[in-house]
Structure formats: structure tokens, C-alpha cells
Length: 201
Image 1: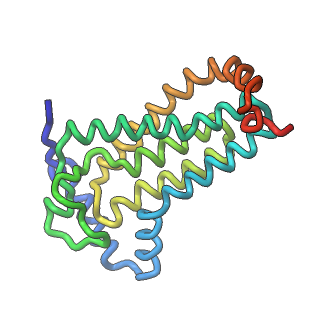
Image 2: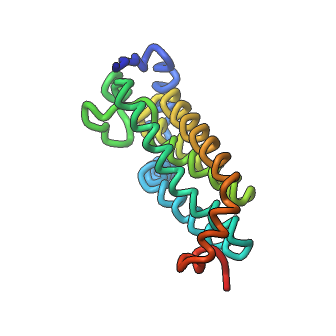
């Protein structure tokens, strides 16, 4: 079953206000936001590597939790992508007459919910389970990612909010389950050739 969501009726005016504000913003700001919108997810991958590298000095259980972060983020992305296939919401840059900073995605590349926001939120929440300080930095980066997707014109505010909720809830559930099994799993893996991934010798 598929559902058609009419984005303009949800928060179209708020979206229009944001993209109009972007049109009058300084070039350096728009260039920075556009770059973050396009390439910012790579920063979360760097956060994951930092979390794993630091966790190795804490212990095997922490390392297993850190290694699980990219796995649960992929799961969250899958859930979000599945919702996209169920909810056919056209991109706002196609439904509304506006000038946007980023090339509007092709027809059939649905808007709800935002994959970028889901992945960023999933990564941030998962990192909170490993190191709270690093996770807090990632949360701020995730908020910036969600906002950037509206600023460049490819998503409504409700798209990024929904994506963030999907990513956060999926990862919270997955990491909560993992936390119960991280210790036994770490002990098993420590007896294998994977031991160097878990702790500093």
C-alpha cells in the first residue's frame, strides 16, 4: 500500500520562507551550507572511526559497541528508505514555484522522509551509546545536516524531522538490544583473529 503526502499543506509556507531567506543570504554562507548538505555525511563516518579507535583503549565491550554503530546506521537507512517507497511525496522544489540552491532531484526521488536526516540522526544517537561527548558533537552536526537540507531546498521541514525521528528511534532500539549482548559477544570475538579490532594489545 502506498500513501501520497501533500507536502505544501503540511508546512509549505515555512519551507518557502526558508528558501527565500537562503536566496538573500551571503554567498559564503550558501556555499558552506550547500557543501555541508552534499558532503557532510562523510564527517559522521570520521566520527565513527574516532569512536572505534578510542573504544579500543577502553576495552573489548566498548569496541564492539563502537563497531556496531555503522551497522545500525545502515539498518536505520533501510527503514527510512522503505518508508520513502510507501509515502510518495514530491520534492518541494517540484511542487512549489521556488528558486533553490541545489539541483532538484529527479521525479520519483521522493521527499519524505529525509535519508540525510535519518542517517545523521542515527549516527549521532548511536555515538551517544559509545562516548557521550563525541555523540553530543554528532548531535549538533545532525541538526545542522537536517537544517541544511531545507535550506538548499530539497526537503520540507517535516521531511527532515521525520527522518531524524526514524533514524533516532531505530538506532535507540537496536543499540539498547546490542548493549545486553555486547559483553558476551566481545568475549567470543576476543578469542578469534578479530581481537586486534577490539582492544589495544
